[in-house]
Image (cartoon, rainbow, N blue to C red; front, side, top):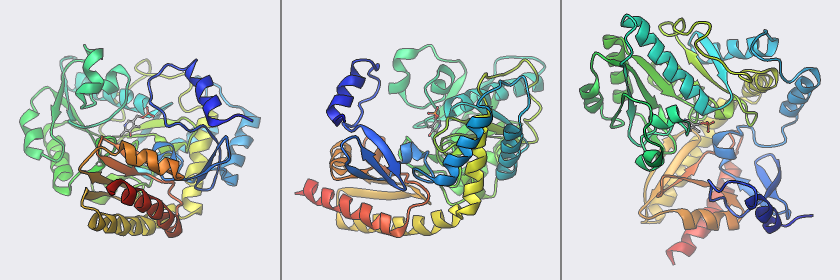
Length: 400
Ligand SMILES: *Cc1c(COP(=O)(O)O)cnc(C)c1O
């Protein structure tokens, strides 16, 4: 048997140090709890960063993966498979859009959406190639050169310039600012329906409806990144449903495979025909294992009545977080939707997060001053009470 420290030292000698990981080596999970290699138990309010929607060791999900593994794991995109056909149709139904391209990650879904937008405008404007994309400050879309180029964070971009050209940044939830940046060359406006890494900021109804109208008026594609806030986390399958609008392209990943790497971009009426054979591809994208996972996820959403749980427990979590805000003057805001929420502090939250982990609670930050709550979507009110009791104990200690 290994200790946490032994695993950490063994990993550090061979892994490039791009993460300051927490000093814990996790071993297995069950329900909404994870266990480290020394047997210590953690209540999980991070879900592998908004991925593990059903928690861990879910028999029906595991069985669906095992069944597919025994049939075939991979065949490439030179052939059709039934799991892929089914997953695509279910995503079309869930998004209300038309056609799907499967990827292996969220970042790749963004890459594909950017390429689609450029191709759309190339066709729209008689093969001209100088189109602009408007993205938001404080956004997060991934770390590849394309996705990084539309991520509104100077610190992430700095050392990696030059990035892709013709990206213009505007202020999130400021319609006038976006309008002032639109011109004849604009081909797409990209935003997260709820900004995740940037601190859990939902789009305002006025903003997102205004952007939709602007895109319609100017023949611009609206790309919504729902990699974090989609797949039920906001209380609807996709967060844009709260506002009665649809994007032209939506990006999906994280909970789509509940831990099996799978992402997708889904295009609506206007954008679905832009990409043609030769324009885009992926060896793994949508392989039978990945899409069997997505199919099992859609099955379990229905079977476990996940949206109902998110709305009920999400409302309860909101009440409890608001109560904490009343109690501690260093908490200055509580915001979010469903089971994607944040509480903002007057100070960085690194020490609080570390103390929570030491006390058996996994939470994560979003920006320096906000604690983020993105638990498995199956959590109960009792799990919320348990989380609040640990967090409250830590906050009382930090205050003193
Ligand atoms: C996580 C995330 C991404 C990147 O997804 P990866 O699977 O890490 O490549 C992109 N956009 C948003 C909003 C995310 O939360």
